[in-house]
Amino acid sequence: QVALYSLGEGIGLTTKGAASLLSLLTFDRHYIETQVKIRQGKSIHSLGQGVMEASRSLAEGLLGIFDIVRQPYRGARDSGVRGFVVGVGRGAVGTVVKPISKVGEAISDVGHGISA
Image 1 (cartoon, rainbow, N blue to C red):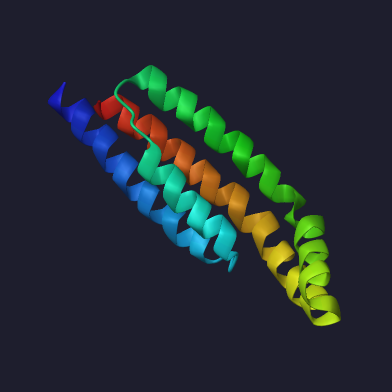
Image 2 (image 1 turned 90 degrees about the vertical axis):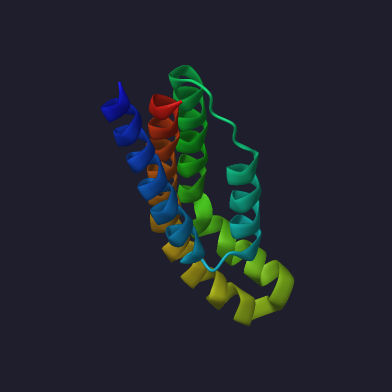
């Protein structure tokens, strides 16, 4: 039982750190701030809660795929042509990085559930 707890805790902490670093690579300030709040608000006390949080994380990751459209639109709306160009870059990165980050977070959620 101690080995399972240690394994779950190790997996949870490692993937949580990786997911946090990946979200910084999006260069999306709003996304980063939201992710910090989400991570701080999580309270996982069982494997069931870990699986539930993991499913939410995966669903949020799927939404990141739409950054390829959403970011250029936001950039153009807020800053014109220059914002559009910046948005294309952010969208291309976010479309790849956000889903990967959320998979890492989902693994972390299950790991924390195992160790709970």
